[in-house]
Image (cartoon, rainbow, N blue to C red; front, side, top):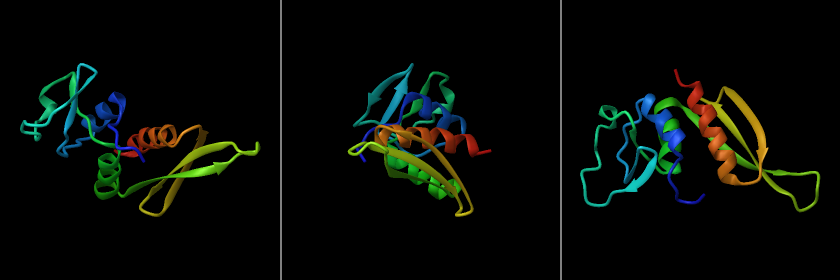
Length: 122
């Protein structure tokens, strides 16, 4: 998995759900800004159009540790030889599993899995 920040859409959802992990970046009015020398523990709830931008791995850890939700992206062997596709499965505390459609890249499958997992948090 590439070390990259989640999308603005996912960051806004995380903010709504109380994501409060320390991040090196934030979205300000939809633009990604990376911070190196500031206090990273900013309370973004005070700002309507700003939110922290965690790495994919931070988001996955938060879902696993705080909500017992695991997202597993698996390769899918297509009908056409040489086709490389991926699918995401969401498992909640080892009991409920949700499967989703196929995607052309690992990152696309992971993004769909994250968005769907965030919808399951109440």
